[in-house]
Image (cartoon, rainbow, N blue to C red; front, side):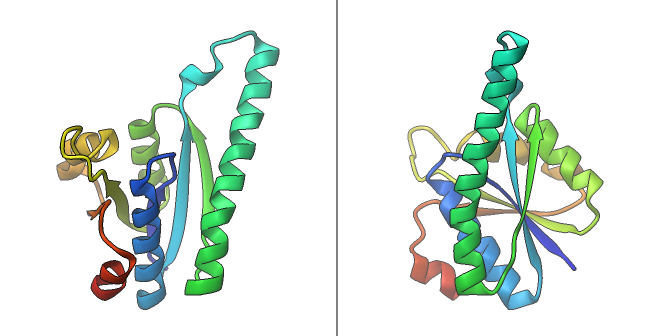
Length: 152
């Protein structure tokens, strides 16, 4: 089964990327993997403190994911998977795509803030697009739910 890979973070554009992936998966019979990356710089503390912070980060990710997952299951009939990795976000996204042959499309949300640009993930992943084994779909952050439903 082809899966859409979506990156879970704290950005507002993440919401539209999640919606797009779930809607496309529903309409194409695909699946959704949600990838959350914990950057390594969050744990540059004593070993015990770093372990506690790592566990707290995982718990926050799981709670955040469950909000999206419930909507995907209840409204779209899609049961997403959660993947949590630690490292640099771009490296971990590329590594996950390379490790999972079922990933068919990377879905990223672009920021609607014209002054700041589309966001660091979109900018950096666009630079790597030519060498990725899957296409990237970039979802504008300011698309309405109705427009997303119409184009998926």
